[in-house]
Image (cartoon, rainbow, N blue to C red):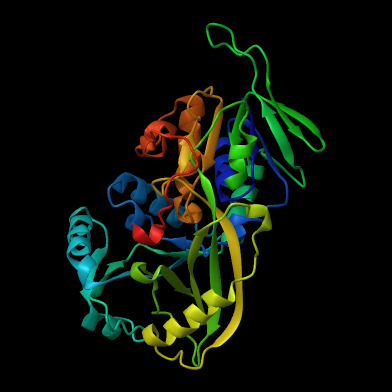
Length: 385
């Protein structure tokens, strides 16, 4: 089967990685590998935290990162993760932690006074405690994407960057749904023909859908800053999320600290600034010394902002849009969790295109799980999950 994948972010690269061994795969991207949302991400890996109700998905994703570590220059940094909670949240998360532990995951609950003993640079004053995840860590998003690209190319995939897709025309079908014409992908440099098309172009995916096809996604902007503490963070420093503050954090390999957050929906992604806002920088500067030891005089190293794509329930859509043929699949709406969720993309796309079962419940990512395919849904941040 000739498959054309539009988008060379982490989703497109993963689809190519999974399909290239037994299909003719071409990947097109307007800018470059991991050049947009993927490249701006923090690279956090915590699938158990975000898929506690789908343990097979968490196990598959965790297993992929462990197995792929060391391939084509890719490195997975293992590190504990804390989901820091308030008193109002504590009872619910403790129950979830117990259920995950009973299911065999390395998860437990730490009361606030237990946290500094294990992680000396964390001082969770005013919080009840945290769920600790032991199957988590982070990756460098660009290296991860290029490693997947290299593996896909070794199996015969072709990547073409600097090619902007303008539209997709679906092949005609007869009464028995037999294809009588190829799908045509028109670009600023010509056209490509394919038996199947995978649209993995982030927020642009919706505008590339042919005809009146729709998927419920909307763009939003998120921000990160990196702080340099008085003394570098040690190897015991965990990654984490502080949901009540809508912030997440992870240490850098050199001992600096990355803090992200500030999720805001936007009307025009093309006009969005890629610089962190002064207001967000000041928010982080005010919060960091209250939660992290040794940040009273931390320096601001840099900051940036990127545009990602939301779905109504914070989980991606990896499926044929409602009303589309099976040979057109979208992979979009990752809600800032594209890197950690990426291992499900290839098997789910393969299932949609070939019928080969995925090793987890792929219906989790079905397009028809939503009653409405519009874009006016209420945005829900992953900080609230």
